[in-house]
Length: 262
View: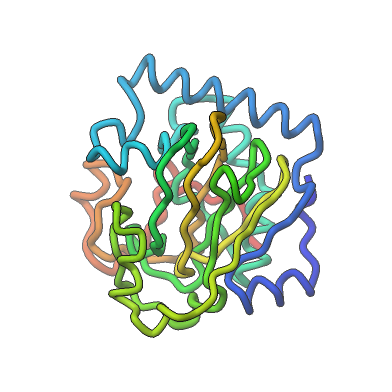
């Protein structure tokens, strides 16, 4: 795993809000991530009656197959996600002293699947932080044809905690942030085994999958250690959510495990 982060990579990430690291996984690691993700998603379908967005509206259900918090139910996925090296890479890019997992998530864009509308990540989550981020690992090649990620560089520095949903009007985010509407978006195609790290406040989306093959990715969202509850439930357990009040530090190791500390 190419988890050692250079000063140049930190500078690029901090400036643009995202960075592509090719060959992040070697060939053996990539094969393991593929096998574990396939098995975890298959298990979720069988044992937990489907994927996270299976009952969503007709458009969103065709954006991607989505399975959240697979590490909770699959030991192999837990082994991958709890790897301290991932936390080190994320924490170094973000410039924070500790990294907790917010949630892992398999995102598989179906053959001829819909584009993923422009959105921000962090406003969905139960904490607000300008240093939240995600890793997006390409399990197969991500191209312009099959729906690679796109970014509007630098928007993470200006974003508010306002958002738009991922719906059929893929440009709705630019109604919330009209000042971004005429900025140039940049695609982030990458080979299998590459990792894309992106800030939780950067404007991003993904194109349609114009091919007859799926475009699979395994992702994980990261919360800086010490982040506090903002009142949004998102993926919090019912009992934990009920016990929290705004401003409480989110530190339950069952919900947000600490995977790296400086």
